[in-house]
Image (cartoon, rainbow, N blue to C red):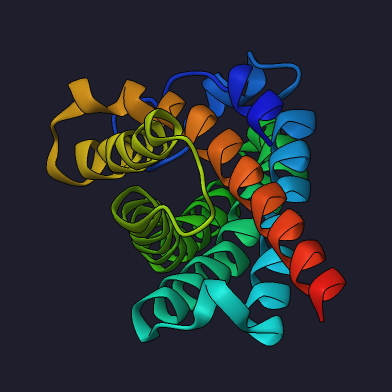
Length: 199
């Protein structure tokens, strides 16, 4: 997922996908399919965390954050797949099939409004809890990096929604945020393994 975001072009002043950007980005489809695959892994990890219980969901706020992250990623997987499989192909015919292209654009914007705030609320909350309590034993600097990355990741959506387009490049804050989430998941797996060994 982080690798896909590295090659993602800058947003074009707003949420709508501009056909010329899609046409001039040959890897647009591959970028978004890679991102969608990473989102699916986030959903699976979130479901396992919620079902498995334990340290990550012992407090209600932690469980709420994991639930928000998981549901948000379900919607965001749709955004990435429609972007990669549908809009990329439609971009070449956007002039002839304007209504269809705009309908797909509206669909991903709607999914984005549902998915992005939920996901970022969950991620920010999880990072904040780890920074505050250090429950998984993460290094303090790593916990702070996760929290700062999560907070900065709000910038792209806020910038596009409010017209503060100078915030849109903060889409790339998602790269360290997702890498941090992967590290957090690895630490959770290590903690679960140690807990099972002691049982």
